[in-house]
Length: 233
Ligand SMILES: *Cc1c(COP(=O)(O)O)cnc(C)c1O
Image 1: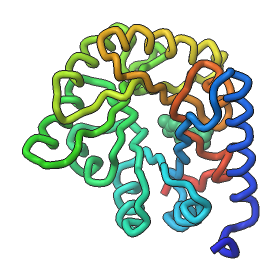
Image 2: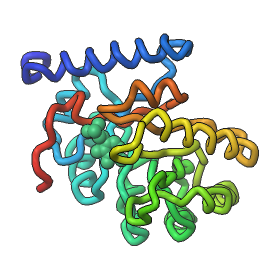
Image 3: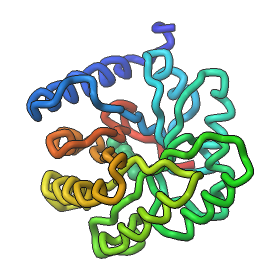
Image 4: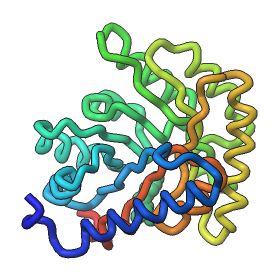
């Protein structure tokens, strides 16, 4: 299959993989402890298939309709889809049809919607990350730090969800390491009420090294691996 891979994709994947391993060593962490999710939003299903042929299993998407179509087209490949974008409650069922993991749980009403959709199904619980908003702009997605405990309690009370930990995006123009340290500290508080919620989904193309140094367990990397995104369709 390798002759189908456009020049560069395998090289970029290998480069990011080497760099994440370097950062793990720099952080004094055992290598191989990270889950790298390749973010393929706006890219065609064919690119996902090329990455799958290179051994990638975890893919991240941020728009329901686009992701639903891609997941259906690639259903034979046994991929794990992570939903990482803002999620309207009314789209919950459509997202749970393909995604096993939601990184963007940011409000009680969405937790309620997941609980309702899941109720009465035999599906395994959905893995969820609570997204923390590190800005003062409520439209950015994510719960304000003050709302974290209440949201975590509601996830813990629901059989529909397994609370993995926290997700965040470093704000534009901020020092990413400081932003990720804030997330790590919030995670240290979260495990007091949710001892199993130890995961941290943080680190994108431009800041994954800083995220790894602050304890990231799940990286969401797009352009550093895929190349530039086409314009949204
Ligand atoms: C697009 C996106 C990413 C990946 O961004 P890159 O800069 O391309 O690595 C990660 N997380 C979220 C939430 C995104 O929307």
